[in-house]
Amino acid sequence: MTDTKSKGKTKEQGASAPSAAEGQQQEQRKSNRGDRKGRRSDRRNQERDSEWQERVIQIRRVSKTVKGGKKMSFRAIVVVGNEKGQVGVGVGKAGDVIGAVRKGVADGKKNLVRVPLTSSSSIPTLSNGRDGAASVLIRPAAPGTGVIAGGSIRTVLELAGIKNVLAKRLGSKTPLNNARAAMVALGELRTHKATAKERGISLEQIYS
Image 1 (spheres, one colour):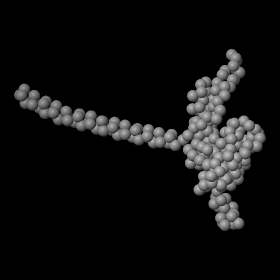
Image 2 (tube, one colour):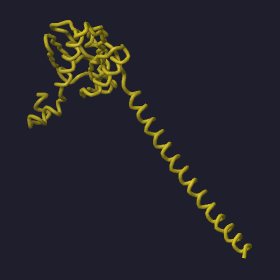
Image 3 (tube, rainbow, N blue to C red):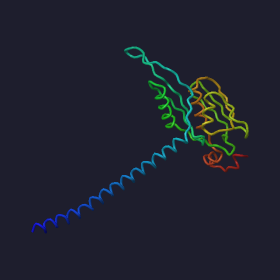
Image 4 (cartoon, rainbow, N blue to C red):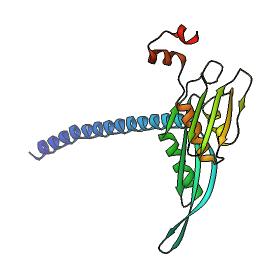
């Protein structure tokens, strides 16, 4: 009797052992799949981040008067663009420079503007933008002209992917206002095809 019982126990243990091993293998497969998905998502995020370029226009130390005295912090103005028709201007404030720049990049990506580019990497029409006391005039240029602009306006146009353009600053010299005015001017740009569609006329009538 004892022999039969021991044989039955060994059979049960032998049957349960492979099932436990199979469960461990399945768990390992699931974990491997999860790791692969995580790696793919990380690669995609890295590719997306590599497309964007960041340039710091200005870093200033600012102070805020509080009950105990003055609280010092840093303000960073950052321009973010992919040189493919998307650009944004962001402002970040933090207790250190790195944190302020990081916040400025995040703010710039939230306020992106899509710019219509021509075949010669220029803008389709003349545009004028205004923000506060700053006014910016942007007009298209022939191939080979380059980016004729200065200050923060040049940075915005270069990161937008515009390579042939003429820009003039009219008014305030503040970098933040000029950058935002340039963003307003770029945001108002429309292609001839889009304008014809909005007016309900043919493209030939616009050129004539």
